[in-house]
Length: 164
Ligand code: CA2
Image 1 (cartoon, helix red, strand yellow):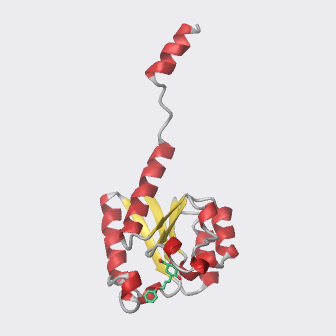
Image 2: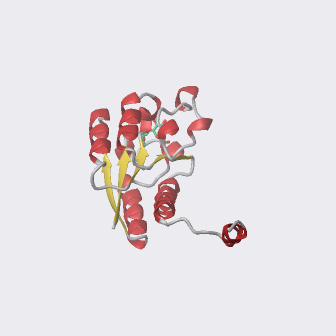
Image 3: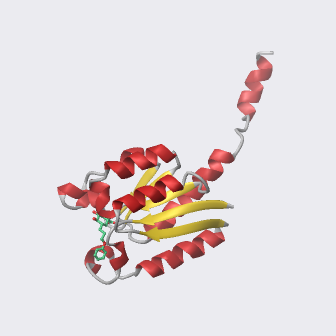
């Protein structure tokens, strides 16, 4: 079974309790339940963790190298500051999708740069909790596409026999 590590960065434990106009009313527990439910439907195992510590996030990303097939990561404020998280993603080489609840590109200039985006498979920003569910579907599709053997198209078969 495929295994995905989902990491929530600093302050996301407060989700649904403060700043609801920006981050919505859903709690982190409810978001995690929705992710777990979708993972079951897709026959994926998700391991979901939250930390306020940059070092702990880095350690978890490093550890994902053995036993996980991909990472979904909302680095929260570390998005805009952490070369260490970026380096850890590069070091493990796992497909990683960066998720943000809010659209960071519409916010203050300091939130518009991500150290993670350049090394992520993709970034989903501004769709609220649905972004995490789309990231899970996206990683699932990506992993399936990577695993499929390349098919020979009818055209290339014709071309091959014509050159025989
Ligand atoms: O939009 C996102 O998901 C962010 O990653 C959230 C971070 C912010 O620093 C990024 O620029 C964008 C903040 C997470 C804090 O979450 C809270 C949730 C509820 C109440 C207070 C903070």
